[in-house]
Image 1 (cartoon, rainbow, N blue to C red):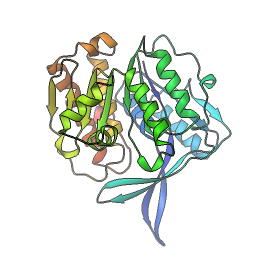
Image 2 (tube, rainbow, N blue to C red):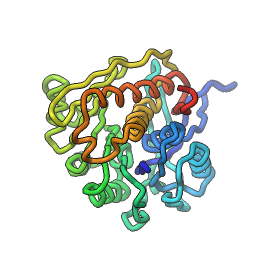
Image 3 (tube, rainbow, N blue to C red):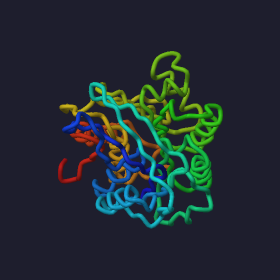
Length: 307
């Protein structure tokens, strides 16, 4: 089982209406998107998050269940659901978040149930690592489980959402030190490292913080990975007619985790010894499932039969 630990929210997607432009609520959030993508790909997955009992929370809960995601570790609360209003410019998404006092944000370590023995990996990231108190709760969970289970992190950085940059950077650094795999976009990588030097040099600087494997997504240019022995692996993107990029990176992450699971590589020793050929297969599958997501509106990951 893979545990996806982080935010579930409602993406308010712009739509044309009779009066001009409105917004349509879609279930989303970086970690939520990855969890439902894993479920649709047939991977054993559970989500660790906070969900509201309001109508949006019910929509999110139904989406998890409909995609085969285990919800037994979800924390339910009578607080509002986080809303992310999306603006699309030439298919690229920017966000305006409403998150104060939300069910997903107001979490503490004591809210989390014991991690099941069946859990082989924990996946963290998204805006859930930016806002207290939930961010500290997820960081504590990561630290507690890092010795026994595979840890993957995608910070999916939203600079406009960060209120205390020093605290946020310190939290990420501590989590990176416990991570086996860190996946970043090229923009995330530049934000973390300062953007000095070539891309591979930035990736090596991040790898020096502790992760065994660094994966960098490059948009239309595909993805690259830096292995524990320093080997670079690159794959091309898959052809797709892009509708929008909402959820593309999240679906890519699900493809990576799903393929690692299929290949029997969801363990710390296996990732530490991963070969170039294995990583090329893992990245290629991530690119394949992401290409389906960008070909349709919103974060709508593919089911296994669609591949």
